[in-house]
Length: 467
Image (cartoon, rainbow, N blue to C red; front, side, top):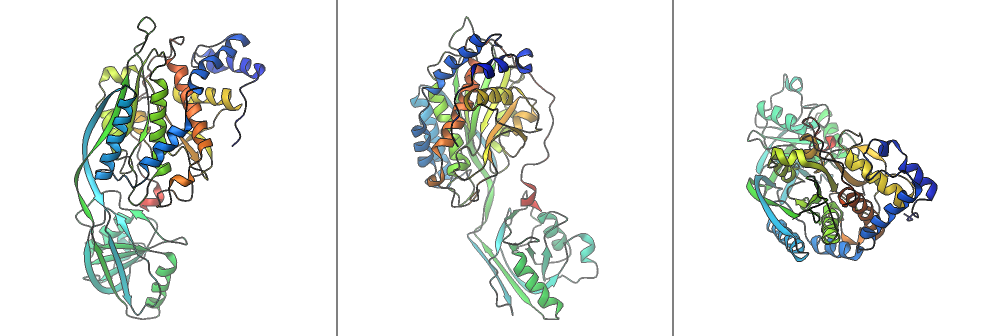
């Protein structure tokens, strides 16, 4: 990614006269080339102070071990973030919340007597321990009608992925007497899935590849009797504690201050087994660096720098944060900038995700910023599954910055520091940093907070993880 120069005077003038400026959305709408040029001076107050080595070094520290929500490792990351904020001079709060936590089993075994091939079973998130054996019986897609005429009492159901959720397949099999369930993929390769939520009615269940599942089905269709054994050990579930880390900066110039609130942040937790260098130590480290940059800059709005816990379990930390906002705070909220996976070497290009794919204050200011910096605006795409979603649900303007398509090692042990691009970190930090400063610099008295209607977003997980 080659950094493009600042805008030419002609392009700057075009932006200054754009519809966004006419609507008062673009900060300090300029009516002349000279005014458009002056925005670069404000940009430089941010650009000249960003140190990408700080971002990289904080990623390196945070990604030395997985930071699963509710664990000691996450607590150490929380304390580290808090200490960094405080070292910059911020008043910092730890906002505690509890949640239902889950730890995957450390032992996942599957054997099928009479099958010589390799099975490589995987557990499902929210599946629990068990040790069961029984005759293997094919039960189609695991829909209610697939069990008609089948005797599954004490047996193991072999079920194909598709049509309904993994959880419904297992619950349907259990309701028909199955002692355990094997679900095989409907596309080539291994299957990694989640049940989406806990349920005491689940029976021991594992996932296997399409190839292994079809091989077992072929043996059953040939009339062979197969006995399967499933063994899962080490799964744990229960109430756990995590924290959001919140650093706050009051307006510096009371004569030019507005009552608006601008927030930017990321999630500090990772998935089990993944060091999470990109997901999302990169966003956490960038939040820290921008907090350092903004500490001594003149600003006219309240600023909040936040890292959230338990994002990977369903945006739990950010949902808790938004739920604790008062009506006054919501009315004063101008926008939230979310940074999730902003430094991967092999991911695609930067995009701005808004939940519904439409423009809002955050996306518009970031597009103006990227146009000034890179010669063209960063594209907006519809996208959820990150901490900007709870803000949107509360009617607050928000957007998330991410590179798409995602890198191959997303949510794997290979999400490590050696795959982080300093050039991408620099690019995103500059775009977000200058966009935020455009909103909070004393010369810009607008925009004020704007609330949209509250609405729920149905998805917390990617669909392919559940079905």
